[in-house]
Length: 377
Image (cartoon, rainbow, N blue to C red; front, side, top):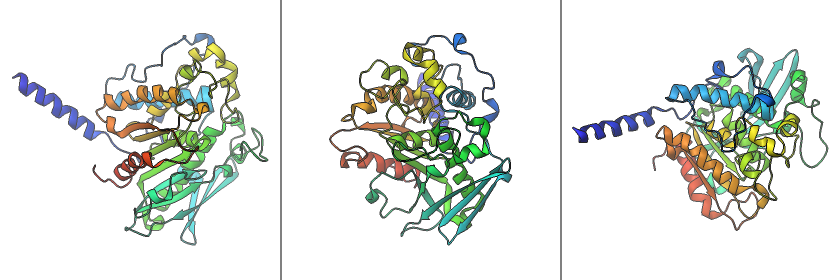
């Protein structure tokens, strides 16, 4: 009898893992569960350990609700609101067979996004798609011979902030024409909004026009764009695979852990064009322990979809020891649902920033093949 019970438990565990979807056809499946009211600073408890993203979660439906709750907190306290867009506000077209053009109209103002789709020379459409945030820093040879289309999200079409060169200030970006009430937003919420509108366009036109399989979309980027890829993948459930390369503080590294380290990008020392200035004002110093979430929960928002984090310990500023703690904490969410193999991290030194070493090729290819091409290990 005991042997039968053990077998049944294993079978149920396997079936539960198999039942979890790898991707969704909606941007935010749990939007109705998002928090609408938020505690003020004096109402927030001090939490020294990393908050438990699974607290109160009994099943996968509970995780759906929890994802929405965590997402709304990250937007409220950290990066600013990522507003929802109605299908009627989006109009897409394909020019010259390769140029995707998406017009988004809100409040009488229109923002236009453009991106060239580069199709593979092998395979048959519809193709999987890898979107590079700002650029795709992964080596080109990883995609040669694979039926994966490529596209770049030109984030400056939404918010043109860059650490070098001229740019507009907060409240003056293209996004702000559509949403003047969200002028306090950080760039990461606005950039995540923009990438989602490209996916809207792909869905609207359909695979017959775009030759793209929207059930197999990946996003990737490095450094500040590694953070961008993580926010884009975490906040859009239509992204099947997120690969965040060397994202540093404000990406996968936990703010609480980074606060205990020297010389790293922590909550007090980062670029606040990227985040709400109120995050620094409210949670600076030891007040970071009042933050009701941490970056491991941003990573966990990707679950049950696939996430790969890549680090480079040669650059202390990236706070990779903090990212590793965060990754371990986030991984428990995937493990809880029996799908731990959908999330991994690899931290390897001995190479320049944003130049993937050959020693990480295998793990990157395994995630690309499994979650964009549905190849079994």
